[in-house]
Length: 166
Length: 371
Image (cartoon, rainbow over all chains, first blue to last red):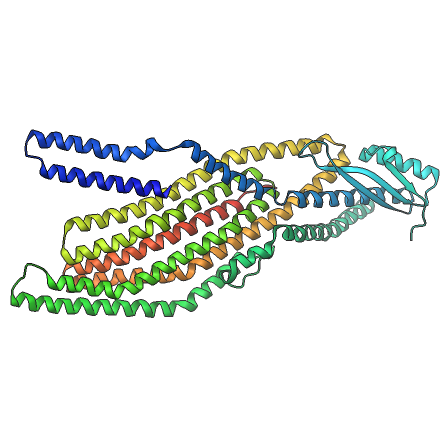
């Protein structure tokens, strides 16, 4: 680009010098007028020439390389953000289930695993629940129903482990 | 009875709010810490080096405090800079006074075909100014190099933070425009404009010595080319940034709408959880984006403060000296001092244009409202 500008300026300067020399050498009268006109056209050509030489493909290539760099930078935090979101969703879902369990008089521990959606740009959604505690059949049935209804996690993705919770 | 129950519910609600606020803040704090590590803010702090003036890149970074530190740095240097500029001005004034005396003597002896006093005066002024010109242009160049190196670390960091805060399209467009125009401007300055400044000084010196009007015009044209190139690049940059920002902003708005639609399409409780999680992550990224933007601005200003002071004060000193000498001596010698001051102004303009380009980019990154 700079070379182009430099050669452009040099070209205009050379053309101006040649035109000035020719003008001073030309005899006065009609010949000088024609010389002036020709000189003007030569100068115009020197000014316009680089514009005609410009290769737009090169420019598009340069722009693409800058865009690729910027897009790579923009995706830099994508993985970390997805990990953070997954963590928050798992935590909040577990807190929600624990709250519901407490309301049912259940003393338990809840682990939730979130999974990424199938399509690109989807958020992670609660996928699997593990409830650890000493639950009666009724409590278990009620909690399963609640989780199914509120969180859309089917019974087959809900695991119940019998264990004393401290 | 009913009133008492309402009061209890209200108290419980307020208590929940009071308990939930620190919990949310604590959650956001953890998210911000994780995001800071992912963005490698330590690397950015190191890239800024001493120019950040000891400002720590933390999420609660204060712009006022940073500006105060930069002002303190500037005020610490100002005495030395003024002393140096006054010394140059006194030397120049002495030369002009001596030239005035010599001119009077020559007038008494009769005119020669070559204006010996003007040639000697121009050469003496150039000899005195050459060290200033060399050191100040070098200082401007160093500031430009520092800004270029820093921008290579700063811009991707701001882009990553801005993209994570919910405007990926705008962030990409901003980095593309800033990197492209910054590279174009730096290349133009180092390969074209600084040589043109030297050519401008040479043309002015030659005009002061020989009195050729063509040389004066050539100097004027060179100055016009430098200012026009700087102005044009900045105008095109601002125009491009504005237009591409508007287009990218529309795309981002569509993306946000699609995300909201996705959230609203799931069951309400899950939707609420997703929405909370997304808001926490976006809020963390927004805090970091602002902190990085403010830190970037402060570091760029820190890089510019010394060259700005040196160039600005020398510019004023040379312009004042030119005005004073114009009352004592002929116009050509005073014109040369004025031109050399103008050259400092041009270098100041180049440094300012590069800094402005980065500052505009940072301000545009900070001013995006995503949540």
